Length: 549
Image 1 (tube, rainbow, N blue to C red):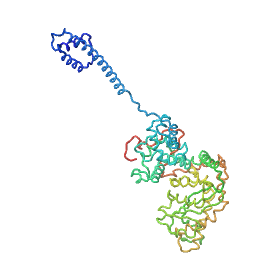
Image 2: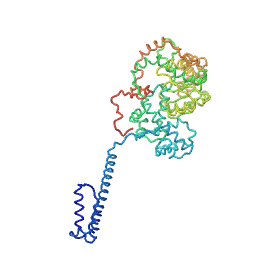
Image 3: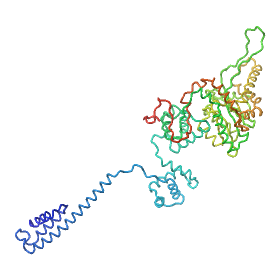
Image 4: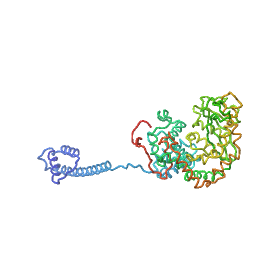
């Protein structure tokens, strides 16, 4: 036994072999040699049995050494592969998915009922990705065959975008909000920051989505939501305002007027509106008329006349006329908490009246006016109409825009501070109404001696005034003088603009109380990647962490 072990060691030393040898095999061979007769003693190595055992041992050792080399080589290859895999730089960019191929694969699976595995392989798409998109499409569309390719492509592209954790709206809902902004920018010449935040709050209420509690406190979206929203939608930019006096000086300018007529021309070209489809609405505030001069004897120190008991009370009247010379019944707003039927005594048929705390036209009241307008005009897809308004904030709300779109009402607003020259009601209608209304109030006071003129008398007096002032000739002259109908974009000359600039330069500080933030307008920029403009250094940045959205 000792001879066998010694020979194996000497053999390995002579050939200077360094390898992993199967030692268990060697010891097993040693025990086998020990079992051969005559091999258990060191002095019987020359016998035939020991010679045969020695040759067997050499052969087994060579086999073990060969296997050791194989094990060593395999171990080195395995170690190198593991090391190479562990140190290889993994790509952080996911493989881009071909949207067009994905849309075709979705239609093949849902419409043609092909197998997911086969479809994914044929379009070179990951099967797991295809399954994920199929699930989202099935949740949003019941009949995929009725969906247009552009709409499906847009939906798939939106689904592939990563949604930030602090978003209030989904990607599809934010796209809907952007569409609202596009409509408002087109109709209202841009939105201020406050108007955008109010619009977002209204949309959140309408969609019944979860939003931060501080939105209800301010009745608008949070400031940090606004910054993050603008950062996600680079096609919207915030334009820095100019000084108020300069804005007024440039209000009625050729640039603003040309922009208004360009928007109006797009609608006229597409819909071919006639005079009975072009409407103009504006609000006016009526109060008990001032006491006019009366004839008295010379030398009398005191001359008295009964004055209205509620002088200073303002009642809003929304008046609507069209280029055909017709009008719809007026819409009144009374400064009362509760509406009383006596407020509409002696009014014309169809006159509507509501009450709020201020008597001013606000967004909820404008929605009521829109219902009033739809009731009498009856617009439809076969007979659309265009409604010309000023750019007052009360005309901007999600409900009003939805109602206008659903009923084929196209809204265009006049540029700021231009209604005195562009609005038909201001040009030809409200002047006669004011004169006739003063006469009606004076006549009423004479016919009702010792009776004060109260708020319940105003609507009836206004309706009598409208019967006298709203003649087709007066209404049509306003649309003609402004170039709206018949359409004449060159109705104003350069002399008109120069005169307007000189007059407006004298009107300074007429917008007192309007902050700089409310004057800044959000518009669609010419470059999608343009950065937003923030003029105040005190405003928080988007990188600042905050729990308020």
